[in-house]
Image (tube, rainbow over the protein chains, first blue to last red):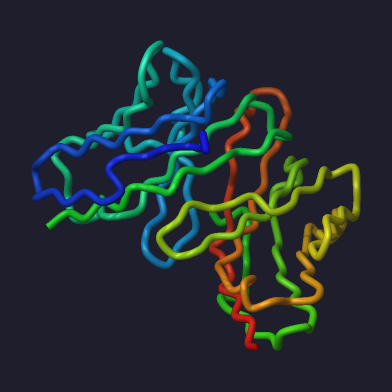
Length: 115
Length: 115
């Protein structure tokens, strides 16, 4: 099963530490999306990347958050100096295209807890 | 600004009966709509989609109806089965110039199908 892989599945960080979330898309998919789900809410778009390029980061907080999708290796969502409000489930999705009519395949998510 | 709304947080139906999940949207630019199903501690799984040029799409027990004039769509599940118990998310996207295929999600409706 070559679905979207995310790791770690669970991550606990203390306030002020850094969190690194990894996402390996479906083989052959070059489009990656990151979404965040806060408790009792729906998923919110954060960023859309293609290999080596950030295409749309309109949903990313202006500070502390960054994302990359290098030519080789997984996509990384990095949160610096985490705060309690960053506690959420972070989902990565991949697609063969950036067009709206293409289905996005989601990974199992990384549940970040900030203590 | 909640562009996609699922006003019913929960729905309970008897096994074998029809489940109807509703979704409203405000952005007339949306031209593609999707339903995702999510189990606890897992990522969303694609169920069914519909383009704005159609008013109905059917796949097995699942049918999605789109009423563009009312900016409303619904997901019908017939017959409902206990395994359908999950959170259902409505999502929308638009393929117009400048869009990146990002999905806008509703808050979700928790469906419980009782045996």
